[in-house]
Image 1: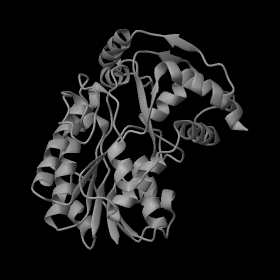
Image 2 (image 1 turned 120 degrees about the vertical axis):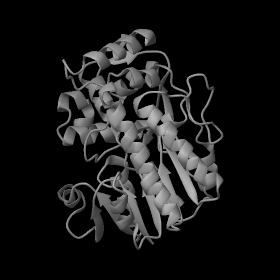
Image 3 (image 1 turned 90 degrees about the horizontal axis):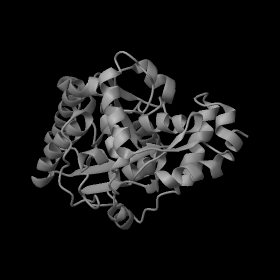
Image 4 (image 1 turned 90 degrees about the vertical axis):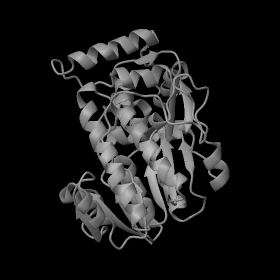
Length: 335
């Protein structure tokens, strides 16, 4: 089977493409940089590719030509206020071009890799496949909600479309650091915030395996949450202590105060451009997390997510080996 993938040089896309290749499938990539693709996959691994952007409908359709299935992963991911308009326009246009064109051309299956933010509602008790589109009205969250509404219309019309919803994605071998990686680096280098709520971590390798199984038709089209394992902020610090053999600084902070700091940083970041995981939208999710129910994908595929401790340990080892953190910050995991 030949599968067109967008976002193949990003974190989730790279691992998904590698899983498909390892299983004997062909991969066709839509990439913005051939040089970056060659650097990641090598010169002979990818035989079919198109240089272009998800906002360019003609390039998208060129990449889809000759393919049996499609996985749309590419998205502009940022919770920074300065990026809100660009994020919204890029993500909605991309979904309409990629998912819409794949359905129109008769590809089967078609997988839209969404996000927990597409379903996020701070008043919900839990998020599952029955949850309505979320309530986010700014930036990244709003883009994912409107993409969700578009793709659900295709599902309702009978198109063979899957939607997956990753939580906070961690794991090794990232082409570039994601916001969860940057957050982990901050905890190891500075302090672990002790706030209300927590976070839900999923390993990128688990995501890639699920996407492979869905491409191969091991479950019916539908919506599949891939939240992984929930870790409260109170438990994260001791967990990182245990993994690294260190005693990390842990600071109790108010969730309301953190959201306020995110709001202030959104307004000041153009004057003080610090590489910190601090945004109003991002801290809203962090301090008011709604847990994701993984039971559908676990039941439908007989799938078991790897322990979060394994994901964190492998991520920290890789970040140290790649020079993103120091050996001291990695502790015993640097050995």
